[in-house]
Amino acid sequence: MTPNRDSEHPQAGDPPAVDPARSNAPGIDILPRHPALKTVWRLRNLVLSLAAFVPVTALASAALPGDAPLALALAVVVALMIFGWWHAGAAFDRYRVAVLDDGVRVEKGVFWRVETFVPGVRIQHTEVNQGPLDRRWGMAKLVIHTAAAGLASVSAVGLHRDDAIAVRDRLLDRGHDAV
Image 1 (cartoon, rainbow, N blue to C red):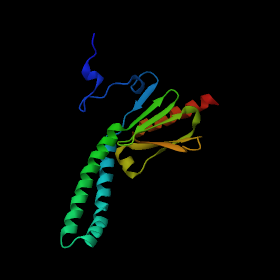
Image 2: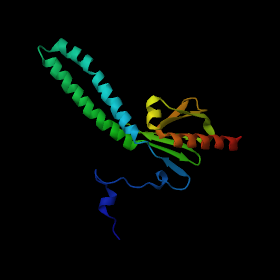
Image 3: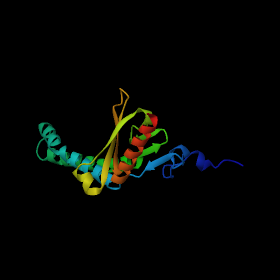
Image 4: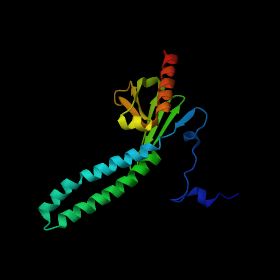
């Protein structure tokens, strides 16, 4: 039997291949991201884009005559808004938090991808944080503090509040078994 050529070289629109090590195999719990996280990231990027308006206008005013600085600043801000909207969606799609039997893995990044693994035996303590917008939408951030010198803590943002608390409790129970 000859291999399917499409499966060897996936195209840009193809769904990602299922990696059993990254799926919901026994011992791996992929935590669902709160859907409001994408909205929060998009709003943050839009505000940051608008904040660029004044500095871009000031710099353009020094180099360009007439109404050109305003037009240039508007073009730059609109481009930043479009890019920020896309980037927030792409970051949301690539963000994963997995609780494994032996630790916690956080994957993130659009251009530079980062995978951080914290072994369960290195976890010192955990905390669940909620800001005003997090409380409004039922989201929470789980912060995992470690014993490692170079990596003092790992944050898992945009979790459902109940999931963050359940993971915190699960990690605390694991700590009691190690002692």
